[in-house]
Image 1 (spheres, rainbow, N blue to C red):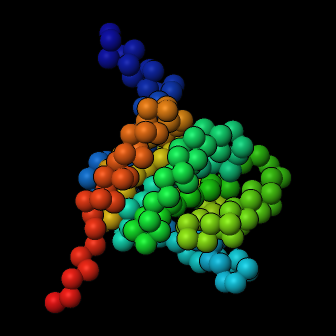
Image 2 (cartoon, one colour):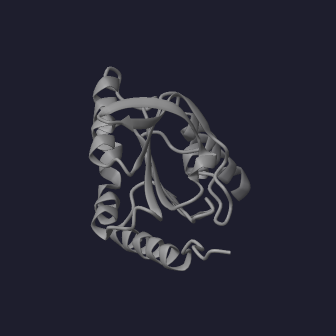
Length: 192
């Protein structure tokens, strides 16, 4: 009887059953974003290129996959402020923000894209991606109208992930983890 009730709950509320498919120590599921994609800043002009999740290697990262809605942006604003305040070294750390413009209010696309382009100009060392088709949300099994935070080590492996708003304690935990990864994953700069 209990299994039957659980099955009904999972059918009626599938988002609760699968908030994401990130697994600690594993790479994120492969994603390729072709429509718009990664913003490229050339002087003050913005261009776009295809973005692939394989590009997440090489630096410690915090990835935010966010719906193109104000309500989603607010969910993890505390986390973003904490990352900015931490002043992590740009040569070893990069924040990656992927905005799902397939999950926005109708008619707000130009506004959302304009805000992302403005942020790319303001933070040129950060990585911004526009996911016009919601490819990442589907591949990574994320909820709609959400903000997901993923911490990756220098090899691109998941170290921590949560879909939804982080608590203040989780924000501190993520900042501590990022600092730990940056301190323990110093690139080998010795000459052979």
